[in-house]
Amino acid sequence: MVYAHQQQTSWGVEKVQALQVHPFNKGSGIKIAILYTGIDYSHPDLDNNYRGEYDFINNDNDPMNDNGQGTSVAGIIAAEDNNIGVLGVAPEASIYAVKVLKSSGSGYTSDVIRGIEWVIANDMDIISMSLGGTGGNNAYKAAMDNAYNSGLILIASAGNYGSNDHSFWNTGIWPEYSGNSSCIKWVDSCFWCNCRYFSI
Image (cartoon, rainbow, N blue to C red; front, side, top):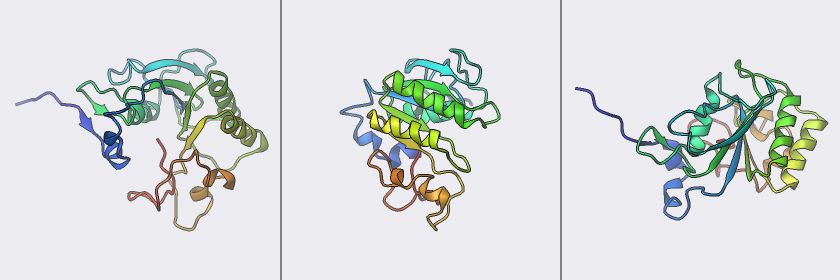
């Protein structure tokens, strides 16, 4: 016998206790830019929350995800409360795809910088950057500073290579962002990995 799947609540939504906030606010009115590999904006769990985009890889307004990860990240953030698929942390938030990585999942710092500049210019509230690298430069740091100073909440991954020694992968490139009030972090560490910071 085959049954239709019902909407699932992921462990991440439960872990950050989003369900306790949902009776009061599900993210309505919040604009979240996702700097990554694009989003499948036709996905039935995302299509009503999808609001806009730019593709810095192909320099057009079609940031269709050709990697898979960007859609997954978007679902974690804002999958709709619609009785199918999964439930996102903020199921009524507006999501914007800012494609800065190629289908391979790699890209250039210059495209990430342009993506950050787009986010600032388009008056987003939150920027999610599930990406990493081996180092930064002054232009990249200046873009991050500009984003923070413009009032954006910055959420970034610390990489999947964490250790408990507070190395580069744990604290990030720029120490001032490690203790920044804009960062979301666990009290100690994720229970499933050694990263210090929670990335959505």
